[in-house]
Length: 124
Image (tube, rainbow, N blue to C red; front, top):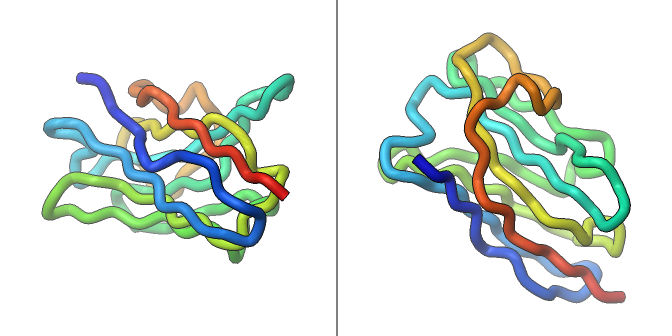
């Protein structure tokens, strides 16, 4: 099963985008969900995640108060709402799912299914 992230594009600084992540049967109701990104020349970093058990969300400091992770269980789709975008948000964004657990992490190894990335470019 291949997760597919979508919704990326070119946006001006200060603007908004909403990324989506879906796949048939995934993410299931209890999967841990994560969003990661990789900017040119940089390592992949985790930016948002949610536990499938307690629904606790965590955000990296770089995106806190600007990005929001949500999940629509009716359509098995995860969203990442990104507001007040900055140049530093330019990256390829990936969604991922991992085993059911309390809480969530930004450790890539904790996720076993990865989506094809979607590119976000923020212009100033």
